[in-house]
Structures are given as structure tokens and as C-alpha cells.
Image (cartoon, rainbow over all chains, first blue to last red; front, side, top):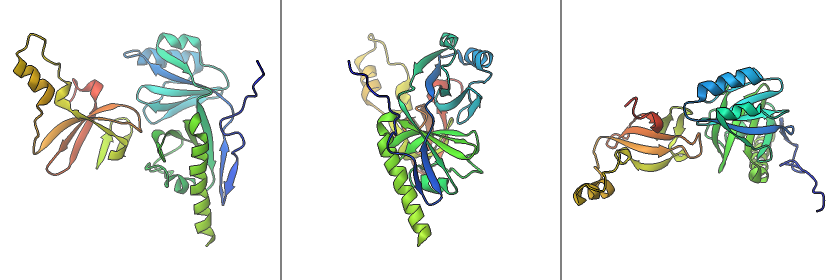
Length: 183
Length: 90
């Protein structure tokens, strides 16, 4: 079989800059969905602390340190993002699914990023409300996205199949904001 | 209308999908029950003017199933709990 080239979900689409905003693709990372089995939440939390030094995130929050982090991604699930895979022993307490190729990882940076996303999601993303380390599962246009604030950037995760749609929709919002500012 | 999701906070009604009256979550009668009881379980719903409890699925959010208490007369939404915890709190 021919050797197939590996491409990132938003290859050829990003980065994109309009006005003071830049949408770029996050670095390639190992991504796993970690879903604790019923009643095993405490065991999973302890095993995560042992193996990686981070706990399972509270709803709408994230945890992390160098090497790996967890972003809450819905009821009883968190997305592992790291340079390596999570410890296999966690499988005693949770269902682990390798989703590294399943998510498009986008980063929106610049003053007014919240205003651009306000056109697409009903969340209040103002920095005084949606603070560093806050996470949400919410609609982005018609897509189901994970949103997370990490230092200067708003991180967005959408299903890989929606990468082009997400880039288009966020791009339109960025472009129209920049156009209004220029009038 | 906003629904206070216990995991996500207040969210717009359009993020949720209506899954029916909460009373339908009670265990169905066994096969030995008289036909009227089974008919009632399957087809008859109270249609209260006032407080009602129903099941909503947080479709474009966290994916949780919620029991929402609301008022059909005033349209007030009084609260929501995770369906998995429905036995522990009202």
C-alpha cells in the first residue's frame, strides 16, 4: 500500500489573521477521552494523581501540568491532552479512548477574541466570568465544541470532520469584527 | 427559557432536547398487571397547570440527562438535578 501522508485537521487552512485576532492550529498532541466508570471516580482521581500528578477536573474546569493536562468535556468525561499517552493503568477505573485523530485543536488569540466567539456561542466568555482554567462544552455555530481558556489563548476543540466549517465560521466572525472596527 | 444545568450552569433552552415527563421514569408495571394499569403507564400523562417535572437531555452541552422542575402557568424554571441522582434530591 502507498504510504499516506499524515496531515493535521486544519492543514492548509490556518493560521488566519483579521484585525487583532489570530486563529491558529494547536500543536499535535495525544488526546484521549477518559470516562470514569460509575462509582470509580475517586479511584480514578487517585490513580491520576499517582501517575501524572493531576486530579480529574471538576465540571467546567481543567487540571494540568507539564506533559499532560485534562479538560472537562462533559458529564463524567475529560479530554487528556499530552505529549504522551496517559498511563494504561487508568483503564482499571475508566474507559480510555484514543481520540488523537478525532479532534481539531484551534487557538484564538488577540484582544476581542470573546467578541468574535460571541457570534457563534451563547456562552459568556468575558475574562471575569470564563477565567483561566475554565472549560465548557457548548455549541459553536451548529457544532458541539469544547472551549477552554489557557493563559492568553482561547482553545477550541471541534470534531475533526468539522475543522473546515469551524475555521470558516470563526473566520467570518473575525473578518466582520475587523471590518466594523475599520469603518 | 433557561435551564440551570447542574454541571454547566444556566444554558439556553435550545441546547436541550425534551425527553418527556419525569413520571415516565418510574418502573413499568409487570406483565401480570391489569391492562388498565399498563395502558395508563404507556399512554396517559397528567397535564398539570402549575408545577411539573420533566426530563431534558443537554444535547449540545455536557450530555447529561436532567430532571427539570418548572411551572407551566408562570413559565418559571425552579431547578434541575441530574437524572442519575433523582433518588437523592427532589
